[in-house]
Length: 356
Image 1 (cartoon, rainbow, N blue to C red):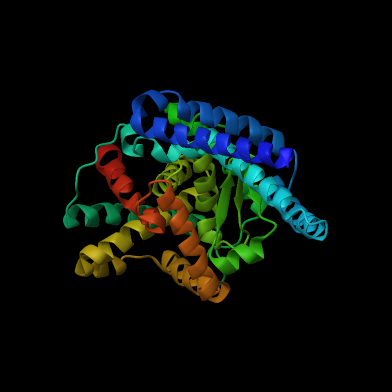
Image 2 (cartoon, rainbow, N blue to C red):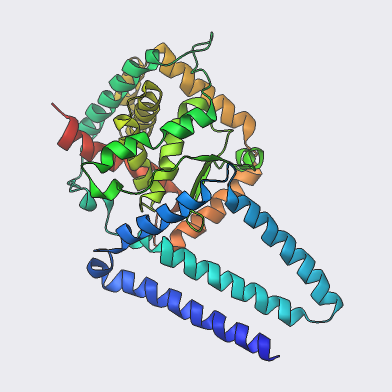
């Protein structure tokens, strides 16, 4: 009984500590985020360097071991009539993981918006300006599309996962030379062992701060894969919100010398902006559709068919609901819809840095 009391007391203490960290991040935001993102990148970088010696995701191995332990220990403690001991043990482990998660990386959800951190204005844009920016990203996607190897049907040819993984951090190294926000460790991306399952539930990747690992599913469509790798590394750069990790991915792809990464970056940027334009001005979107080159069109259609065949609608819907709740619990009010909010950042970047 004494051990159970210690576990409960420790768990409560850890949960209080976690709550205090979140409150500090909310109410003395300028103070905390004068140092926290850099600290987070440093800790994640150390963890990533340590776990990079293992070719497979350590996070998945640890998760599997934890599940096995929970099942075996539950059966044992039920037999021995010590169920309370098992409950307090799980409570303690959960509290430890939550505190470590929030302390190492989770507070980045409360960081100032990315446009403030990168000194980008955040004005509202008109439908005409959205169409102009979308047109630019389309032109760039059209330009790079013929520069990547193609299959007979015009779709992008598959590139070796490890080759892409080794090159995924190169764009961040370029960005880090001029922007301190990208000075983290851009360690290679790992292929998820659970890729077939991830594909079914509609997940393309994950960043695990407790091991510093950026992981991507091998079921990700070819044209999206480089961008997705850079997205997960973007989380390691202390950009927790999904729209901000998307924008970091675009910047890293466009800074990479490889046409494969540049194409994936502009292809993704165009698709996000086009989806926003379609909702805002369908006529303008339909006019832009006429300028989509054959290669980009082939990838768009192939990606749609790929995910339609791969994903299980029920499993994906459930996963989206769970992840939506997770994001909202960390003050991301738009939940899973936040991915598409990268459009605002793409427009700010275009009008302040790219427009000639």
